[in-house]
Image 1 (cartoon, rainbow, N blue to C red):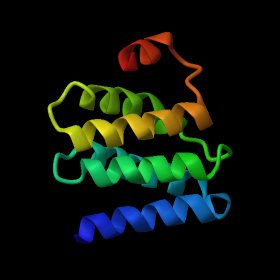
Image 2: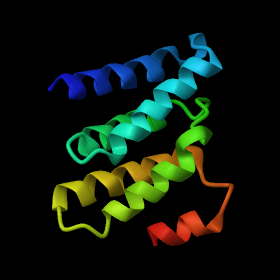
Image 3: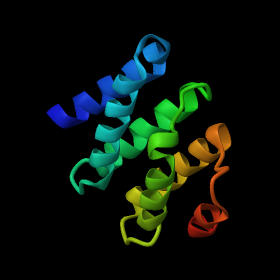
Length: 112
């Protein structure tokens, strides 16, 4: 529960105050979010947090974690958990819609 609350606070911080944060602070928060995305116990909350952040502003630069997070969420689509698949698919839709993927067609292919 504490980790979930911390992720929700991260979403609020990055969504509302991203312009006030330094590049280093933003990168650090995004890196922590990516770590939580790869952790089995916090992945669903991390997916929802990433979706909230991505949907809040397209001005926030998610490039430090964009490729890794898309790759990780795409891998969740292959797992058995329905709630995990649904959360990952909704977050992927939000991330790609608001931030796109200009780096690689391979990321699109992973999702498809």
